[in-house]
Image (tube, rainbow, N blue to C red; front, side, top):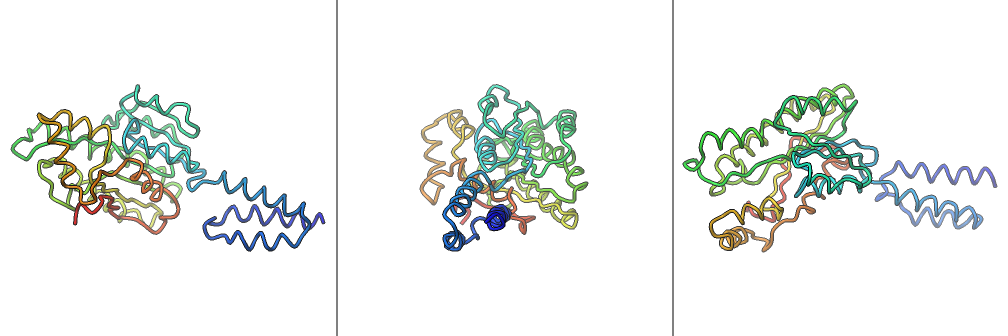
Length: 298
């Protein structure tokens, strides 16, 4: 009986290291029903407990920027729910406090456009499994409405911040021959020309190029790098941009008119994609633009 009990528990714990979606639970149950009820009961509750507590990102250390709202916030919460230890950064300390107290999440005020702050952040970690660069700014206007200051500011926030973050954290990944970098790009980039998004689209096209470059350079050292390219996402940032327009009602109608799916994407939908790219389920995915746009580009 003791040997059988030990073997039973061993199977349960071995199952933890499997992909639960591929475990044939029914075969386990049928097999153990042939034994003493107490053995089956112990196995059943052990397996159910482990199934509930094991997440897709269990044990992974994740750092991300722009976590105080929108896609960054939704992704932070989704990562933590899947068992990751998340360090959520943003320049907005007040908004960031909304994440305080959530299990698995630590917050830190960081301006990712400042080299000294990025390097100080990186020093806090012995290693990082996933780096998610989310910080970005949307400028409205064609090249004629884009002043040099607009160009410099947008490129600094959208591209240079990712350059600084990757350069600071990549050596830690290389030391372990394992790492996963996710960058926030956009369909408004080299993928699709969009009216009044000159410097924004330029910056997002640069992010796609940066992503592919990092993926190609460090593939053989165990590093993956992908970017996410959303369409129009319903976030506080979008709502604020709409309110800042001379005619907010018309601006909202214009955004909706270009949605072939008939609605805006949600931050939570993008977060689901982020979890996939952060997990080992996407282990064979690198150098890719992961598009989530409801068919807008078509």
